[in-house]
Amino acid sequence: MRCPHCHKNGSRVVDSRPSEDGSFIRRRRECIHCGFRFTTFERYEETPLLVIKKDGTRQEFSRQKILNGIVRSAEKRPVSMERLTKIADKVEKQIRSIGESEVSSQIIGKFVMNELKGVDEIAYIRFASVYRQFKDVDAFMSELETMMKAEHKK
Image 1 (cartoon, one colour):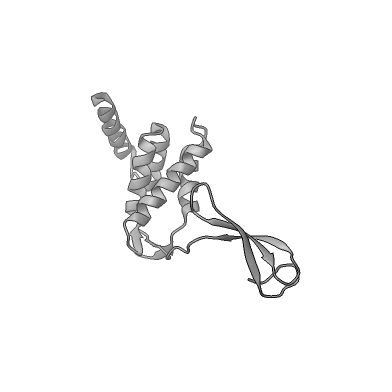
Image 2 (cartoon, one colour):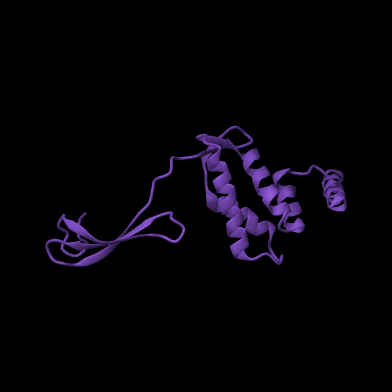
């Protein structure tokens, strides 16, 4: 590895530690030429994942877009950012566990809705209203009634 100080190739690993969540490895290195110590991070490269949109176009998967949608749906609700981030992480894990290189936006939306339903009903309804694109108030009310019946059965 090239030294960021003297720009010569050649370093040795002094220390190596996995991150807390195991998603990357932190390595302390020392240049064999000048002795400068620096840190590198090693993580695996995920294969690109494409999302098939409703209109049939394909777009690279973005965890940030999922998180943005979840955050918008939970705006002014008593749900912590940490919880919303965990939902986005779980949804991404579910998507990647499918094992396909392409996934439809409908599947992603269902995963998000399933997670939000158990966290905050208002956030769930807000997300559903965008995801399902309710055509009118009746369609919206139908979703609310379905949710209320499910809640009543508990």
